[in-house]
Image (cartoon, rainbow, N blue to C red; front, side):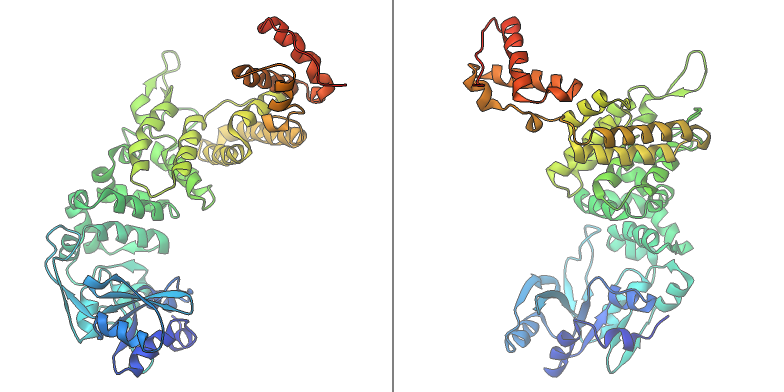
Length: 462
């Protein structure tokens, strides 16, 4: 563990703390920034707690011309904009009853930092530091960091009854930090997993997105029962029977295969979600080969596409990202040939960015399969890469054509016939890139129009 004094003396949020202290209030660094500093990790953000009321916080910073935002004023939180950075300052508080398993019906402000720390979720988040009064750790958070465990503050059953989302947060922290979950805390999660149904699905989706950066957290979600409560099709992947893959290509359940695929993805969320969902349809499509007797999963990509849509609705991702994910799931098993024409047709249909993502997903999918079956598949993937390098500068999209719609209009085509003619041109140059000149394409178009449109075109070349 490192010295907190050294970590906080240059903290960008220290002037915020000092401003409140100079105005006669108490102010402490709390929560994640203290945890990260103890671990020797630069904090992503700095949260502060104070005995000043929200309006006193606003007035204090108004006096020094620093803007504030009442982001959560009813719960005591004010965002302070100090030198173009945002820092949350929250009044010491005690939470009232949690009627909805998510939010307290009321909060009461207090003058005691210890009261405030008592309401927090986990011991590693219930520590505080002050430049004069030093470090306080009433629940043993520092020791839990050393033990590399996640433990609830006080009675874990009470903590999760107050806020059911804390169960998912416990698993996310365990995955992100590579910690275990303390036995009583994990037992309470298993006992209360049904409470997760009371949490808004969008909040669960947000936690799931964060978990995808450490896929092993999904296994904890399954073992705790939360995954079955939240989205049974994902839980089925880890079930020894439902997720079975008795198949020459696999040695894992679908769930363990999925984790292996995700582990080979970059941090890009589109690829992570596509990896999570690419085999969702396998349990529903499993059959037995009539001659060989092993498991088959015909049309599982389309079943996966259908099953992933409710999950995507819960995730706060742009529409375009969700469309990309769906396309990757639909085509993740596409048998792309390593030939110039097949590859250019694929690029024409999907575009280069999709092709690069598809290649990454294919690589991960192969690496999650039986090691004895990987070599020929990796060789084929390498052949596709080599083919792409060879044809990268050849035309495969309408924008690459030597002719455009204006040229075809001048030749006498109108309306939808222009699109049909351009499509014919593209098919021609994909098969023979040397034809991609106006001089070569115009006589080809003239013959095509005479045959398919019973129309004679005139050349625009002079």
